[in-house]
Image (cartoon, rainbow, N blue to C red; front, side, top):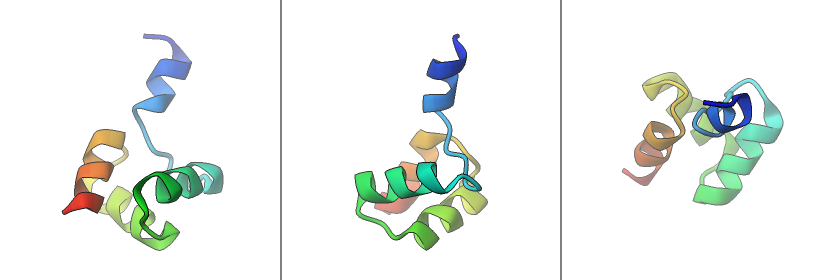
Length: 53
């Protein structure tokens, strides 16, 4: 798996641009995205599932 593909499957909770992207994509706040990353890890699928619940 290439690095860019690998990067897309993870959310770097410490990188503002990634948090902002995920917040915009899901309609969650940046704080909610960061909390989801802390709760379920940095898997983009897991973070998005947590934000939907």
